[in-house]
Structure formats: C-alpha cells, structure tokens
Picture 1 (cartoon, rainbow, N blue to C red):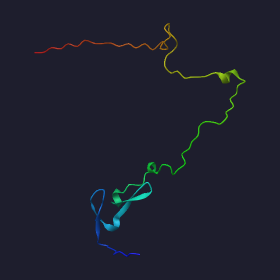
Picture 2: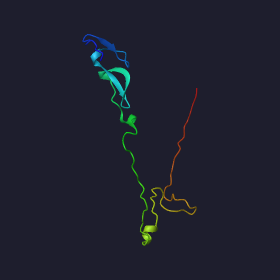
Picture 3: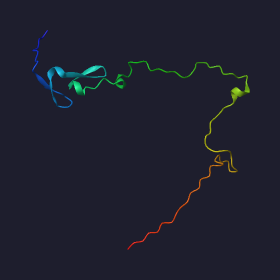
Picture 4: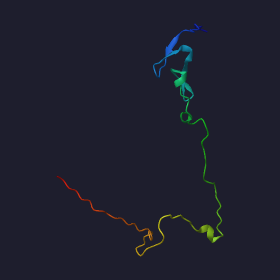
Length: 114
C-alpha cells in the first residue's frame, strides 16, 4: 500500500468555490451515494439529497383493492354523491348560478391636456 506524507501544513483548493483550505479540511463530494471526485471545503459541502437516491427505498403505495365487494342490497349504496360549492340551484336556462349575480360600476374619467 502506498504511503503519503502527512502534509499538516499543506493546502488545497476547493473545486466548488476555488477558496484555499488546509488539505485536511477538503472532503469528497458525495452524490447518489458515490464520491464524485470533487474535493469540497467543509463549510460548503452539500449532503447527499434523498431525491437523488430514487429506487433504493420502496415507494409502492397501492390504493385499489383486489376484488372489492360493495354493498349492493341497499339503494343508498348505489347513489353517487358530489360536492358542488358553486351556485344555488337551476335557473330557467339550466344554469347553476342562481343567486350569484355580479354587479359592477364604472366611474367617469376626465382627461385634460395642455
């Protein structure tokens, strides 16, 4: 195995900022769980972000049921319900905006040039 000098007075340059650091304060940048080969200063190092580690964690979240058995005996179970927050009923033309009348006013503007 190769041996290296301790270099306690040696310095190096950050690959991200270009600033001078003691060589012992430069750290390998890790992305996707692997070192990139860039030596970065301790104060500007980025942690390995979890979004870069896709596929390593199980993210399966099934929503559907296999062979569901809804209650078919009750008529209430066969009705569909919906939420309609806009409108108050049907008008003669079939609109569902009864009671949602909008009123606006326009004022007069006088422009004079000299």
